[in-house]
Length: 72
Image (tube, rainbow, N blue to C red; front, side, top):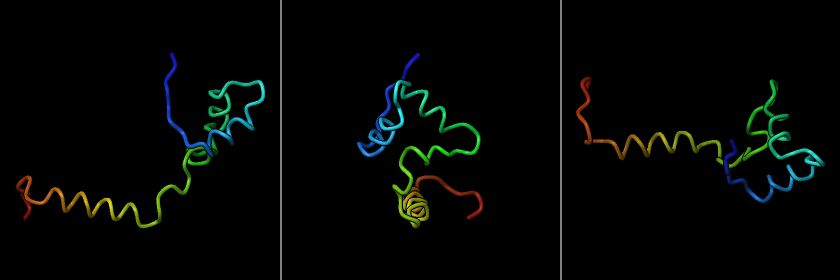
């Protein structure tokens, strides 16, 4: 089975340089072996350090009043 994924041009170029006569799946799989993280090959540094807290605040703000909270 195969899947389509979207990656940035920069990530594609990095994978293509490593690819040689291997498939892209093999290159990605090699990087996902123990000791590697998906961020090593796809998107590290996409979000700034404050993004997580900003998203949580947005979710909190958007969900206010949508349900009753039993502890409030």
